[in-house]
Image (cartoon, rainbow over all chains, first blue to last red; front, side, top):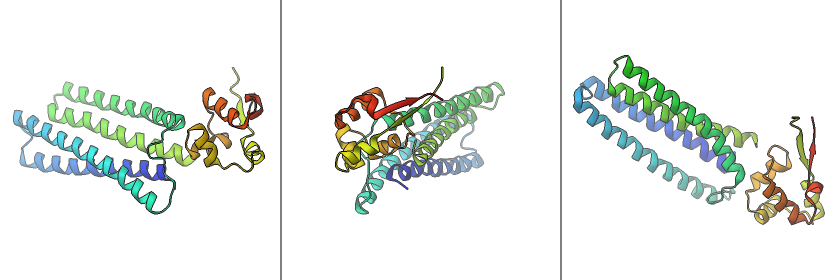
Length: 148
Length: 71
């Protein structure tokens, strides 16, 4: 497995792990009733901020870790060098990613229409974004692995 | 419009150029080695600019490096 394949696969796993951690926290809040009422949205806002911070920090740490590990094992890396093929692979994956975000938005709107409440709508919107992140990285991994 | 297939003679040209490595070629044209691998295997069609750069490295006209075959 090449450096870039491993890096994109780990980034997909990173999104899954952080989202599961977020969902676990949400479950606790739901059980305790902390997400009920207007205060619930404030708490959800903070939780989403935590999710974003964790995602960004983990992404950077994984990228740096992958470069250090690859360099230490003498494996070729392409850190800092992105060419037209990388940009094409990224763009093709992003198109699918945007579709997932769109589905998340649609699901959130439908949830509001059905009277599910803002907390659920925000969670559906977020789910679309996280799934988009996972799909983008998995598609990139698949294309790199195929040698496109 | 027929889609066709783009083939290339990069492998032979690298051989003729004193067994130039894929890494050397990649560095000369500013892409990753994986991109050269994908181009050589005809799995990725380079942009016109990159195609010209590759042809320039070997000092050959573009049509000697890349060929388009209709389906």
